[in-house]
Length: 244
Image 1: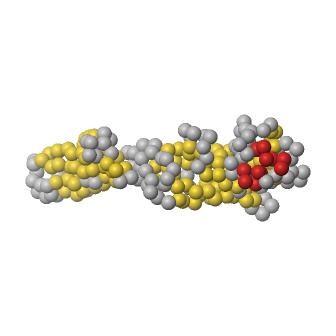
Image 2: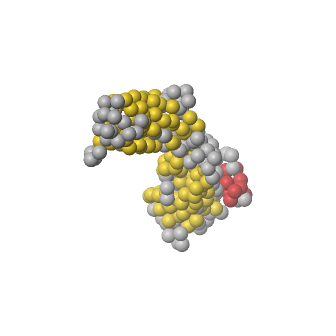
């Protein structure tokens, strides 16, 4: 870390006279003789509606040694959760608690539906305040938030006569809103087969709808699949059709 990150510890640091300058300011600092060896998160991938509430995430950090306390007015470990696109804006900041007298520290922060979808950095760090501010390097884990997706599929008519046309159609929505211009794959698996075969790739129209005609040849299951991306979850749907 090139500067002390004190969002998670700001409330406590502000109460320390020697550290009052830390709030909103990055003072001169020195490196602690302590390193963060590992960080684990109870969950790192989320599919959340923009209207969803918050989910608790437990973060556990293992240090090379317990944070030093003797001679310091404050010593602690914390985490900042920031969008990758804007690392100066923390959406969550939490101070950890030491597990007994060990070098393990643990804290709980929240990931909420109101946060924009995308990637977030959860950066864990230690800070000790004495005559000067000392800090560990940061240890970053990546979180992802995606919006839920839903696609429908209706393959009709059903049943259908062999050699006649069958239409596979449906609608793609992201977080309850139609998605235009998105590519979806239409696949088919004949009865008894183990794998699907891609039959076509089509785009949704301005109303989020797709439609494609095929010649009915065998009884089986049709499938539509949307691959998703960094901000939208993947989804799929199936519909079985009998060919007479």
